[in-house]
Every structure is written in structure tokens, then in C-alpha cells.
Image (cartoon, rainbow, N blue to C red):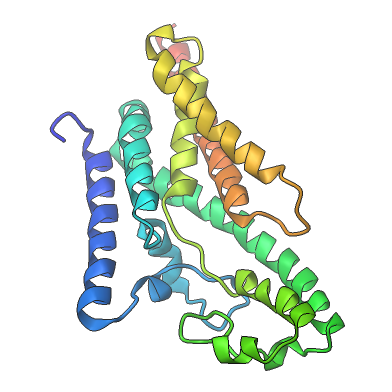
Length: 245
């Protein structure tokens, strides 16, 4: 990691450290820390303001989540820091993730209304649905439902779930990287990888569904953040050139 830029190194180490901490808490205490430091939708009783500063360092228990996020950070993020510096890199990490959360939170609100209408149509009041300590539909409650009710209530897990991960920030860095290197053929492999990541997100978003894809929207929010920082970088460069002319 000696060739990495400082901020990227710190962000990667924090992400890995938080994932290991969550794993240790689970193994030693049986306590799933990620359920408390991920971010819930703002309508949830489990939402707390501090989660806006923790969710972007938390990853799922599936190791591929943290592995690929860290890998892509190592590939694309140093370029951003070399262009805009340490402080703006850290600011961008939070801003892109927060814009992503705003998009995801919007999807929660939209989907909650749809899901609750479907549940009510089966004769169940959503307020009577019992949740377990993981904020998911309780298995014992679920077992008492008929098949039609199970289909409707199963979707309730989505609108009570949490969001986490560095993906919003990551998509911001990838967008910034690609738009400044699109004609740099020396980086054709990384460019192809970046475009594949963005295309995969678009493809997943366009899959037919009556519910919004909150994860994809978070990625789009991160991309928007990347565009904002790209605009800032280009304007700063133009002003610098004007002063030298």
C-alpha cells in the first residue's frame, strides 16, 4: 500500500477495520453491530442521525461486498485524490455517499406506500406486523399467514431494511475517473472496467420491477456527486489557467 495516496489508504483501512470489528462482535458476543451503524430510512424508528456518518464504512456479511468495494477504491480513487487533494477526497467520500443515501431514502418512501397498500389489500394492517431483532418480519408471525399474505408481507422486509457500504462514494470516484480518462488509451483496461461497473448498475436499474431499486439509486446519487466534483475541478482549472494568461 506504499504507492497509495494517503486518504485512499486511510479510507480503505477504516472500511476493512469496521468490517473486522463487526465480524468480531458477531463471533465473540453474538452481537450484529452492522444493524446499529448502518442507515435506516428516515421514517424508521431505528434511524439515528449518527448513522449518516457510519453507514458508508459498513458492509454486508457477504465478504464479496467489502472485497470488491476495496478493490475498486484502490483502482479508481487515487486518481481523484491526486487531482483534488486529501481534504476534498474525504469531503467527496461523504458527499457522494450522502447524495446516494438521499436517493435511496426517496426509494424507501415510494416503495413503502406501494408495499403497505398490497399488505392492506390482503387484510393485514402493516402496523400489526411483528419484526425480529434484525428488523425483519418475524418467522413465527410469517408462518401464520396464507400464501397471498406471505407474498405481500415478504416485501415488507425491504422497506424496513438498512443501507450501508462505500458504493455511493465509489461510484462518484469512478465517474470522475472515467470522464477525465475516456480518451486515455493507456488506461483502456481500467476504463473498460469502470464502464462495465456503470453499465451493470444501469442494467440492474432497468430490470422490470414494481419497486424501485434503492441500491442502484444510491449508485446514481454517487455518480451525480462525482459530476459535481468534476465540475468543480474543471472550473478551478479554468480559473487557474486564466490567472496565468
